Length: 215
Image 1 (cartoon, helix red, strand yellow):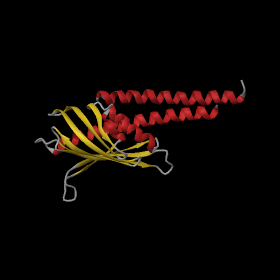
Image 2 (cartoon, rainbow, N blue to C red; image 1 turned 180 degrees about the vertical axis):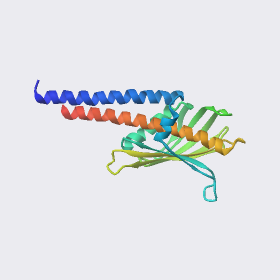
Image 3 (tube, helix red, strand yellow; image 1 turned 135 degrees about the vertical axis):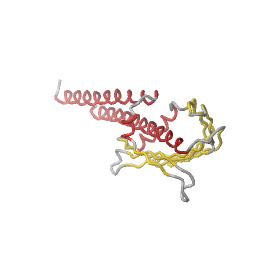
Image 4 (tube, rainbow, N blue to C red; image 1 turned 30 degrees about the vertical axis):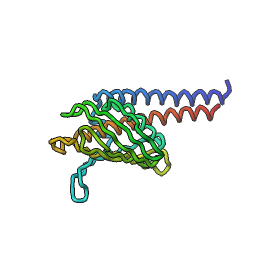
């Protein structure tokens, strides 16, 4: 075996081993996210949560989560859309109408405190690789639900700061602090899952790219 072939085997084996370890670790974390049994302290350490109170400037309270993802915006963008299709808080999510920059879709939320389930029709307005703004069109329970995903690329384009801001009015006589607390935990789990999916996907692409260059 030539030196070039030996080098190629070592590089591919090392990279593939790292990828498999990443998938194994992230897979366990994703399983915990799906079952709701994850380490809350570890999840919280990855996500920075901020609460905005209702004021004259802000007509309602909001919750914002921020996380760093070691993947470029295009990978994170795809991961956000993909994880929504497999969100354990949803019985289903289906597209009702779609245009170049907007999407109308219906979702049924399950296991909600006090409510049990809620069906919502929402509208997304997208600026590709930059932001997704969503707002409630109608619901059988919720009075309001709106927010945004914001994608900020690092200077070298290799990583992304992902931000999710959300406001929810359940339409029930429940303290908003309770609603925002539950919303914060859902944002933490959602952002953490997107991070794991995006980083695992990015690693896989890097492995395939490295292998292709050595062919």
